[in-house]
Image (cartoon, rainbow, N blue to C red; front, side, top):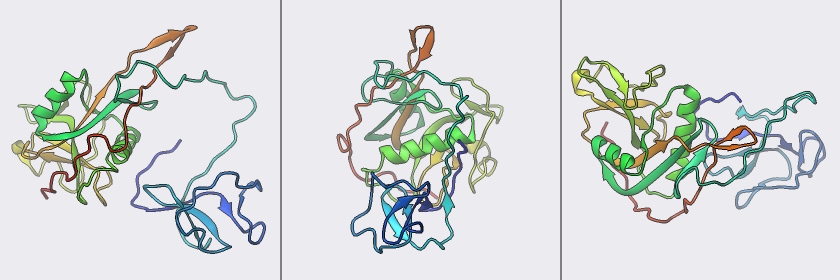
Length: 262
């Protein structure tokens, strides 16, 4: 799957009335046995279906509107069949969410807002650590997960979460787990603008921020976001990593987030 980031608020999928007037069909000609219309939709009996971000609800719009789009392709009959991962396990502790890519457990906590060192200490007390990111795809997955986990929190328009990238005494950046810094995603405030004072890093997930990173002097507090590597169980010689998802929609959610500093 090709993963990318854009500021688009909607995109095209294959639902349309182009093939049969007044009837919604998929682009392969099949009927829509599943629908996810927003309230008051479809707004017309003709057009194409466009889900809106972040809630995924469907809207009917003119098919002539320019938008990003999502494609799919059927695998060939010779494609390799991979074992199915059982859905639940104790590999991740209760309250942690497992993501198959990049194969880690994640935890979000908004009971308190903490500075970098305190955020890391909290993650370590839970058996994990602050997040490390090593590719554009992983950055997109992590940021999207944060967006999902915080959708019931009354954040302001610009928000960020500490990740585990910090500046060493020799003025170079390093991940807290010692892994190589083989990917960075600095935003408008480049890492050298802060000089020696920019010692830790936020991942920005506010509106228009595109999940970029910004250095900071550890002068702001945020909610806590942690990761851990799940335990691996062996089944018939195949390694599995599973998830235990006990995250509830509104439990423990406290309202306003930290104000934008910039």
